[in-house]
Length: 125
Image (cartoon, rainbow, N blue to C red; front, top):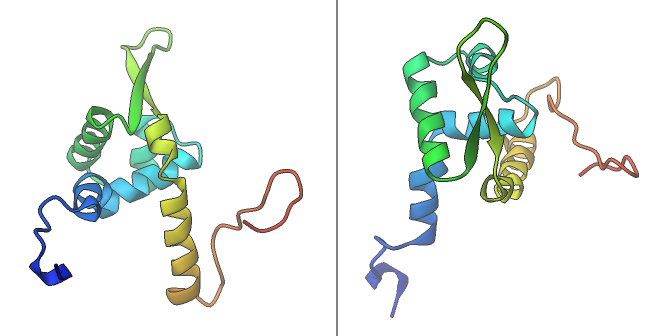
């Protein structure tokens, strides 16, 4: 059977994009990989609306890509930190590939913003 004759409703790429293929979702994941944990930090760093951020975080938690861990500062209500789950960590090669593609094909004159290096040897990743 030829590709154009197949049913693409059950395509793995399509299912993955349904979950993480939206711009803000990928940027939330990028920030999570870079240590952002709290709602206010995501909001401040990404500059997106509260409604969009809350929706994306809710979807990522429901899909078990992120987990919400409660914390409470003295005198404040309970809030949540968002941590990558093993399922979320498995998206690292996807984000790294997008970064590398962007560095090559969507570069800016100043060069890449982020230089990723191996912790032990310091070689570029």
